[in-house]
Amino acid sequence: MMMATAPGAAGPRGAAGMSDELVVGDDGRARPRWAAHDPLLRDYYDYEWGSPVTDERGLFERLCLEGFQSGLSWVTILRKRPAFRRAFDGFDVDRVAGYGPGDVERLMGDEGIVRNRRKIEAVITNARATMGLRGRGGLPELVWSFRPPAGPRPAFMAEVPARTPESEALAKALRAEGFVFVGPTTVYATMQAIGMVDDRIEGAAGLLDRAHGAPRHRP
Image (cartoon, rainbow, N blue to C red; front, side, top):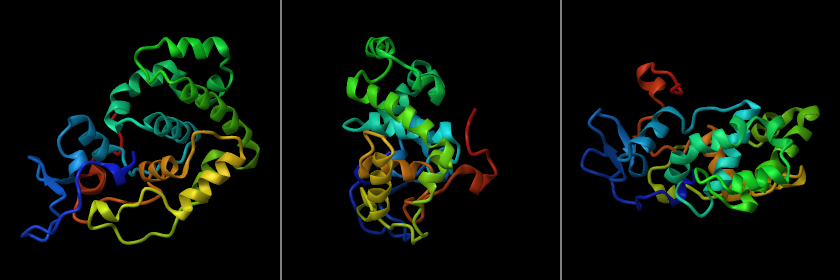
């Protein structure tokens, strides 16, 4: 999810020293405005966003979904995620890599997903590119090799970039391996989602397991 364009403009500190961009929920947890109201976004923020993802299938799925998100809201993709997973065989890399023209037409007829031919074909292309990396450390090794040094958490949404030198370099490396629909902005959103960078607004709650011992991911 691209945090730089999430709802909530930069604002001053409140009386308690907390950014006005944070909203305290009825559970007492402070969240950024983009994750404060819709239950689906709240759960995503609490249980998933920023949780390290280091397995091939997980990284492949997130790259694909961030690509589908381009031009749309992230909550739209979240609502469609179960349908995406059904349509793309759980984002099983080997199965998707074997898709042919008939599968593209099947997916174009699936009302549960985003029916964009270029994005659908990109998923297949990227599955094949992912397979091509397996003899050289795999997709996880390539992606995580571009992890930037840890820095201070942002105080305001305006401080959260849409792209960084590291996301530009990773996008270039992915394209060199045959990936498509992996521009630096999409890649940076992926880096945020998989925990490569920590762009939580200062004062906001992190993953529930960090605060309350709850599991990172819901079943």
